[in-house]
Image (cartoon, rainbow, N blue to C red; front, top):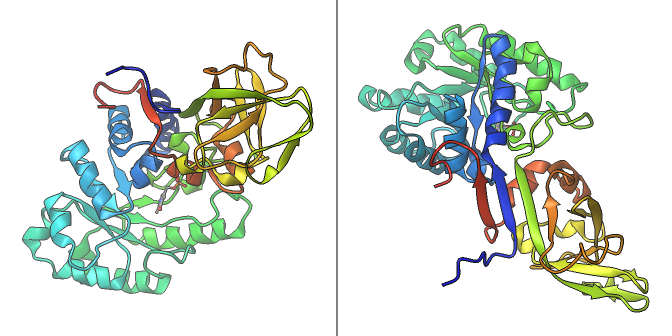
Length: 376
Ligand SMILES: *Cc1c(COP(=O)(O)O)cnc(C)c1O
């Protein structure tokens, strides 16, 4: 067996950059007396739950959020005990034993979930970390309505039974600082949260951490910014680049006359131009919407995607790159220092979150930096 890499593309994940991003966000919170959790749902936003969580924990992160119960089970196996893991989907009917067995904390989101939690035997509740309660202040997705939250807060027995460690709300427009809903959600959350002095207030996602100090509360919940996506759209990205996706040129085709390239003959190139083929396509999560729109980088050159992105292959116009640089085996970055995820997402008509979480399974994944054993 050869030890040569047999994958067509390499996804490099810089765990030191991930750790630096958490520290940068945590430092913002720490100045105001709070701290940052880490949101690692969606397999650590597509980058691998175990290496991501180990790295964040080694950087000092002591609270984690996942979306689903199974993600929590996997995360508990990675982290061991002691670190609270909150499951945002809440206490689904019949799942309490799983929460207890894996020491997961539910984020209670409906009056029914609160009632179910209160019905659990004390011995079972004692095996879970104290729960969180989710108040919906404007997202209208998960959480108690303001009226339900007030009814809960008015019920002293319920509050002392549940004894939440954290109260959560989630911003709908954190990446749009001027949006009026931000002030509305802030005022609602402050009013509700002040009635639970024994709980930590958890308010800001990545973009929320850039809305100003009145958005900090006690526990930040950044996700996407940890992974290098810009939490301040339209302004320079304060985060370090975590992801690089590079693929070698498989072959270079010289175009003789006006000739079309790729499916549907959607792009015509002139005589003397050159097109480079790389082995990444939409089956790898490289969006087909980048057809005739996206860019790669070959060394210092930006090279446009030409023709349609196909399932396993994408074509780049390398006519502007000297022939000895644009040759088979030379690496083209599809995401990297010159091609930010945010640019890829914008060109594809989507957001960095979706690019990250769609990253395919055919890449050779290389983890650099990070704590001992994180990438194992
Ligand atoms: C996904 C999620 C986060 C993290 O949001 P980012 O925008 O990725 O920082 C925080 N809180 C909740 C409830 C979420 O669903």
